[in-house]
Length: 284
Ligand code: NAD
Image 1 (cartoon, protein in one colour):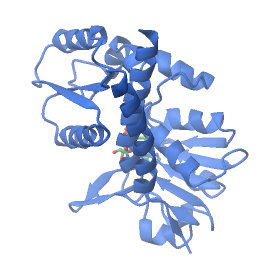
Image 2: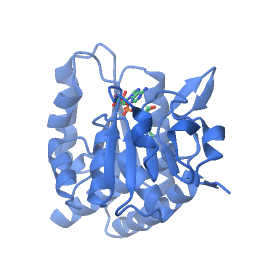
Image 3: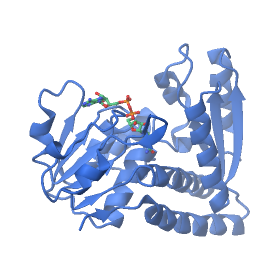
């Protein structure tokens, strides 16, 4: 029977550990705190912010939201990031996407202090990821996938993994984390000529494209593990990249959407705020 890989169990375990560290920090009078920066009123950004605030509150992390109007000058946003970098009471900075056209993701990534970069987007943390240096802070969604694979004891060393999607936020850093775990990784994307050729060989297929229902039973070999990072809407219903019911019949294990990776991502964000706070406390 196909095993459903629930994200909630994984998130609960991470949250328990995070909460313990929060308690330890509070005993020495340090309250971990996250600052969220949002520009404009994009509904998906607001939904993600709401989920992040809930996840932080659940484990005792303080949250401050700084909201700019859509037409705010880039300098105002970057200067707010400078202030948060300097503020000793702020341990993590999360800048919500999408950003206005006038401000690139790269400009933001270069401005955030790597010590407070709890979504792992700065060049310094991405360099540490490539080096497999555990002092770094990782991009939260790729780390959420790794947490799920570890929790369900899915063997990575020597396994063939196909990651579909190669964005700098999900697919590319995830491929590196999998390589660090000694998997053999094929990273496919929109220009891949024959996607099925790669996915059918894989022990584990991980899809992070945002193309609803892209992964069909033809893409997956019997007994594969299928992880769906995609999050989209079709006819008002939330769905992932994978044709869940049909693929579940072939797969040994599969993540649901919702209730899979997304559930773990916010727990990972909280975990990384606490990691950053702990490091800063030790340094002070
Ligand atoms: P993106 O648009 O930046 O990148 C999409 C990637 O998928 C690209 O590399 C593109 O080449 C590839 N792609 C698109 N269509 C394809 C197709 N038909 N065949 C093969 N490759 C294709 O998106 P992203 O930010 O990486 O996000 C990907 C998905 O993951 C989205 O659905 C997003 O909502 C979701 N997401 C989920 C979480 C979470 O916590 N669950 C977090 C971040 C993103």
